[in-house]
Image (cartoon, rainbow, N blue to C red; front, side, top):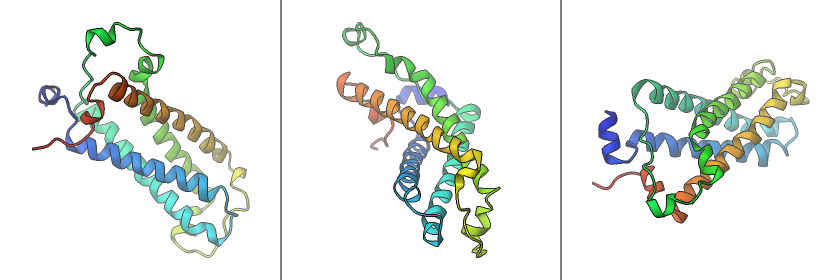
Length: 189
């Protein structure tokens, strides 16, 4: 299976779907968290954005777990081949040197972020409040739960990893002239 993938130099459609779906869900969860939840008091008007944020977080946890298991148990995605000699003769960029570590760190911090969200929701009794319509009120302050601080801190680390991931993709696609983004898209038949 792996030999077939490296011959194509592209990711399989399932990898492409999971990659872009997870990216979309992560950006949506960040957007809701930063633009809506942070600026809304812990009243009934926070229930809908919080429900969407929690649902996105659980979906992200499911997808990142699936991607990790696929990567470990089924096959590893193809690795990028070396650049052309004239371009690669230049010193590698620091961001490019970090690349082998970024994917495992992206998986780890994405899963950790979602698990910390669950670790906030359980003691705060959020599942019955948000999804069960228990009628109970939200906690007055989520920062009484130590995991809330970690959830926010890990979000910054995850954002930095995503920025590095995007910058390396842009560097390889546009500055090195490799079809880097084409590897993570669907093939034409």
